[in-house]
Image (cartoon, rainbow, N blue to C red):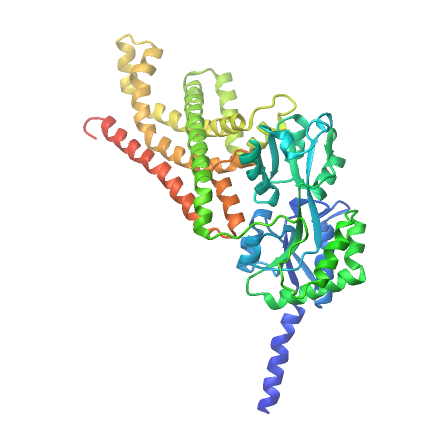
Length: 493
């Protein structure tokens, strides 16, 4: 009887696992041919990684279930166990193999250079781009290659959060070239007119699946499925259907199938190999870049706050002293800015207005942050102006002061003291909100930290360093503001 109960318990305990879906993580923003919403039915996904996930799930006797994860967070989500396997054009790197359970490679890609068609004969290789701006995705093999090229060829590496805007910026002249996977480059050539991709490979890389470090048993089962799919042609069929099959794949498959150890990380000939380094060594290498990014963050925040104060004070003054039409216009500005996300405003200023005016990334970030915070600052100043006792204003008028003199000599100085504390809070908030300008290719502190964390495979040390730098920038300002408050405090308060 006891044996029967134990057997029944084992059957019941095993059944949910067998029927559990295969949760696979990816980023649908990456688009075709990896993962994207099906244009015919947006509730469904399409792409070769979608089909590979379905193949794996079918072989495992499970159903595929997609988990949307931002591409730059896939490694951290895999380590947390947010999904069973990550598939979204994920590159095979030493850092990933050291931190996660990584499958055998299932696709080999070439890092290729894309330029404007008019420059195809002038810029044939990375060495031809000395002193030029070259765009790519942050935290990728291509970005690491460009960082090396910065030292040898004085190239300016421009990091993007997606693979769409590098090519659109190339077309309008914001960058001079783009270095990315040939799969992305070929897709961009169909989408963006006036660009050309060179066939020769700058380097080679491979796409792999990633699992949590402890999921080696599931990883080994997936490796076996991938090998069978390489042998019987199912992977080839998938890649041909998406028009990405080429002569590199048979050589990759032959090497994978011939490998004696299924978990071996033996590299494809010509692949980009980088030695693994300790976390502290990585900190030493990245600390100068973090300090430069912190300086950019501080300068951007100070300049943006200066603009916000100037515009905010003007808006507040106009709403207090202006006529009804001016008050209506200024109120509309404040409500529109406060009612829409800062990220949307940045996109509109940098990308949306590119056909009218092509602002440099730093200038667009400055105007975006400054004009956004100006709306909030104006409300602070307007409240402070209206908080000045009316008796003082009436007394000044009786003494013959003009309204301009009353504002300059009586009302504004007292209002500034009232507004100082919330102004300080807004500046600290702006320091943190400046992280959003990375979407405009500005290499500020949080973006540089994100790249650092992606390349070392951990957020612990990069996160601590980033937090320390933010605190180091914000605490002196808060201390200064408190000193000014004490110095300017009205008598008797």
